[in-house]
Image (cartoon, rainbow, N blue to C red):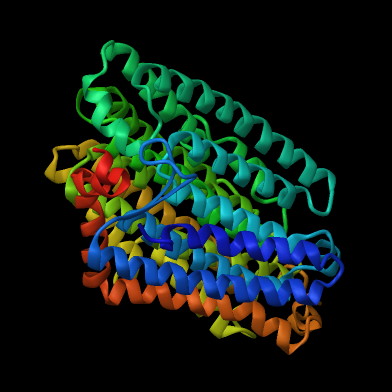
Length: 505
């Protein structure tokens, strides 16, 4: 056993406790938030290196052997996802130094970010279905408080919609977990993979699998369960929106991947895969149509979260090695690009005075470098070569064609064109056209009021994530080799099961 699988949970937890002990020292909170995310990035990177070299690893807690112990299991997928979470945590910690006001900092903004990271990493690394439910609740509680910090009416309205539907999802999750335990007699994921093929009442097992699909569909914002997301993600500070956009829906996608490659396979997953296939297509279309209709930058980007989730779920439903690898590559690309676009939205608002594209403009002439930095994630999201989004879309669409899903491949291509249209819309309205207020001077904006240090703190994460998008595009092969390795582990989970159960097989 190794202690590595629990470090991405312990590090943010310890940082949050230290911050709470230093309740009135916001400067210490900022330093601890930054230091913790740096330490988390180092631990996650080391864990990924170890998993790739030596295979999946497990830690069993509580003095019990598998499958009764509290299990943390790291395979290539979970290690990659914790690295992605660490990157987004680090960039958000830096961005927050320039963007978050002192009032929110005083109300424990930084400890809440750490608790959210703890919940996200716990979901990625847990080897037990009930503990996955627990980590989802940790995420829900911390994200709800982050949503309402500031207590504006719009925030409270968005938070109520967010928490109501997610609580309903949690209730379905708990019911499905109880049914699964009653049928299989275990909740350890690896043990379930061995027991479920021998469980009687196959029809009821399909029902349980669909219940989990609904639960994770809500978390991932799948059609038609997505309406809570565009109603809530535009209401908190942009640093919070960016972290939500990068990570929270991806936890739902991760859970879908884990359940429908490890636990529910074969006949038990056939109905769920068919539902996921067409749900992914509808999610792509409805998300991008919602985005095209928006003029509020954050609402537009929120609808694009939904659309891009459709690609990932579509890839998982195809269930071939290339499709799963493509879905994982797409998820990593989207985490960086989408988070970056929300960071850019915050800078655009401070420079232009509004999130409404009809009320801003003329940003390119005084800030050409900023305009180019926007184009990197925007064109990446649209799938323009040689950026990361091109390879992500190519893998998914090629996998669809190879398996005969021509209609959905065509839908994916059409959605890509509409994505490009909406990114050009932001560019034209925000950067290219003249500002509708002829007297507006960007030099007098709230961005310049921040001072050079805080400005640098807001721009640095944009540069970091833009470099990730470019690197994934130009150095596609090593990244694909990593996700391909993860996909093959998922589709043949023998090593995961052996690591999780140890000698209890």
